[in-house]
Image (cartoon, rainbow, N blue to C red; front, side, top):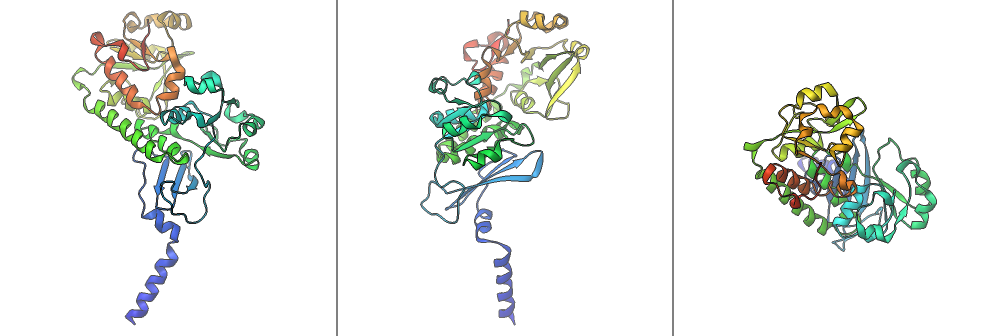
Length: 358
């Protein structure tokens, strides 16, 4: 009788878990910080799972061979590393450039927003905006995949592109709240291109640099910091639980809206900002290159006392550089904030993204 129970138990276990499920259950999620990306690795396969933040039941799965192993089992979505990509976001370009794989980018949305000099000189195809890309240009570029940001609920050209053999893959790096969670999407590109080892090493380097700056942040000089700018009659600023607020917190800056719930943007009347602006030490991201531009666009900004100081900093002198690189390199953003905290002793030559607004 005991032997019979044992046989029944073993049969039940074998029916509950398929071989593939066992392999992935025994593997470890490579991602440590990302909320929307999971990468599971076994000897014969890699499973990339991308969860939709707006509908968490939707998971886009990609099964690849483990390119660092000779073992193969089952079917794969791609048999070999991707050689030709169309990237519809600046952040995708930055991550591939960080891996020195810019030559694999054969198409982008617009050359106007490309910062990387080497990529720009190679003249990749310009496909247009995400929801209106030129399918013929995609085909002519011979892209194997299109990586898109899924700003809308659907990618309108996905079906027609699939029919011509181009796979469309969503990328939700921009929805990550933790700065290192956003940077971790470099692993997504590393695995797709057969450069997982290099991507892991690069991400480790980014994490160590970021955590080193964070742990050495001087909290005794916590500068009262405002971020954001005026649009119309309202002031828009990152909420207290947002990606940008996390960066300010990790730099040891005292963000005026740090206690406000939410992960997106906040909107306030200008009058409230005038009240908050007294005693400010730092104003980040005013959205303009000079104080004159700020006053021309928004004359009532003259009511902000901090406008009379030299404590305004922004990345707008080279926005393409910021948007292309900062997602992958939050450690460099944090390093800028750490330098800004030195105030009069700050060395402007050490700033990578930011520049004083004068």
